[in-house]
Image 1 (cartoon, rainbow, N blue to C red):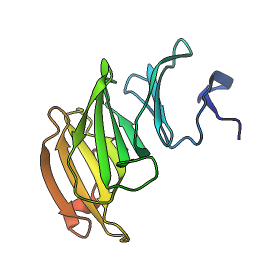
Image 2: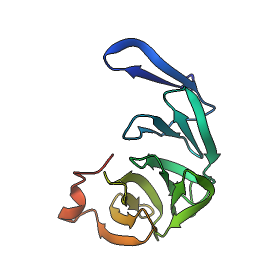
Image 3: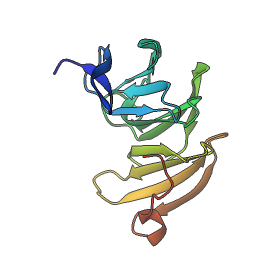
Length: 170
């Protein structure tokens, strides 16, 4: 494992870009809608890469056990999900980061054990989160306002509504 992110143009070989990151294990990699930025995360770090200039725009520690991350379609916000501390316990934690000012992430409330998936809606206004209770495979789906972090709706994964993720950037 060489800890390298490689980007290819699907129509042309060889690779177009290569980023060597000091990541322990890459969990998430996602482009913005215009493909100008690439967000990459590992267990406790996020990198925002400029895919045109092949440079790291910024990076920061999440200060929590990061299981998943997502970038808004316009690239202005990043959501990280996981557990409250870097030992992988302490309760679920979802943070919403404003890329222009990463110093004050918004923490989104969830009473569950861990948050395992996050995704923005196509318009970037809503954040989808999948959370689970400790020791259980059953999950809870939660929808938050990406603007103010307010919980909009929550339901158990057994419901019919929770099974459809159509229209979500996953």
